[in-house]
Image (tube, rainbow, N blue to C red; front, top):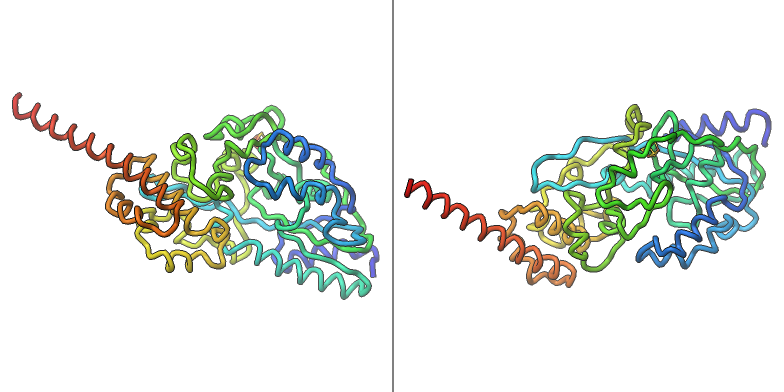
Length: 362
Ligand code: SF4
């Protein structure tokens, strides 16, 4: 039954399930759909053809659930995590991927929330959505009152910041909608735009995936162009820079849900250990994590680019062994790394010899 207490009890149940915040939006055409179409027209989606293929489906959530009337948006904090390592052989993984696979965690919580809704409203049909269905989650989260969309394109919650996952529960009954988050609180700040290491923002609210480290390290399947490989720094899966610099994340709370606790193996992975590891063992280690999306071949490609960009010549023996890797993408990345690191090693050997000669003759 939808009575005066429904909204409050929904929130209590969502909190009990581990969500940090919940809101309700009507199932309508999202305001941002027009921006999505412009983004696609500019080609800013890079190689993510699925974004273009499903653009029309994102025009209304009825493409996901027939007769949908309301969208319950729930957020779950994954937290800021730990600082990066200064050791050049160690890589960095976006914070959201350091805990358990959020798809699994959120889906299970949303299914439980749906079961609760059905206890209260037996005629309700619904569907839990985490990332994979064509829904403009951030727009619905804004409409459900959870926060505003920042200049870095992330949803920002005044209290929780932006280190949050968003999940949606689509239901075919009218639930009492919350007021949309009408204001935005970026003001004159441009820290995220200024800090992006690859200048991926055309301007406020406009991200060009062709320049985004997250796109290249996670979504891109083939070889990395030199201009990209040279600028990944230590990122091997995603990037957090535009969130790390955001003042609204200064006081962002830590994760409450134990599944969000970072796996120590994914906080600052030893990239030489990665490229030395047995392929099957490495791939098995990805199961149940968000890194599975990029697979071993993408992650080893990224690790090779990072080690090369930071001149980690001690990786050379392991790089050489990858020249015969069964994966073409890994072979190509290894050949590039072997040639470049080899040049760095021979230059520094020659410099050492020069320095020794100079000290002998002085
Ligand atoms: Fe907005 Fe500044 Fe945060 Fe960027 S860094 S999202 S401009 S508040």
